[in-house]
Length: 198
Image 1: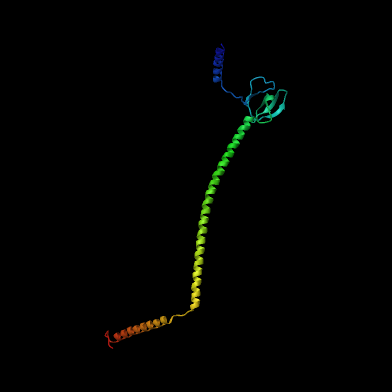
Image 2: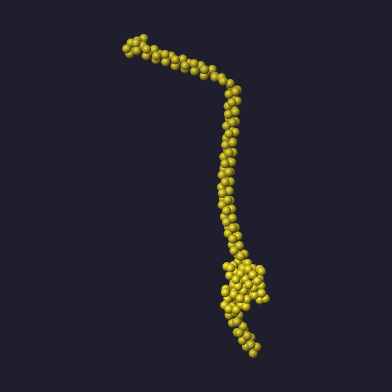
């Protein structure tokens, strides 16, 4: 008997749990806007939760309000609060968060581009510094070599070795003799009609 009761209870309880759906309470509220304080007649408009209203006059249960588009009417004062509804605040925060995310993404992209150009500039600068260092070393080497040759020239003075001097005198004399012989040969030929007479 107890088994039958347990099975029957479980049979009734399980389908209810399986078929139950989860619902949430909404803070979306619709208020009617009436032409008169008595709220008689057909509503002029339906106000959604979060609509900003300017309160023109307060009554016991109703307030005369002006909508952002300029229309005026009466609505229940019990549903009007000074703070923005949480749903509206949440939407504004989400929009603000999306704008911030876009700004962060833009800044990241800008920083990546600047970092890449900075790396390229750094590489160019390093290459220029290396070239300048190599040029400086080459300049030092050339100055040292130039100074060495100056020292050699100062040590020797402007002296020509005797052997060079003798060879140059002999070469000059031979050249002068040969040029003289050519000139003499030419004159003799011109005088004697192209014949050589010695």
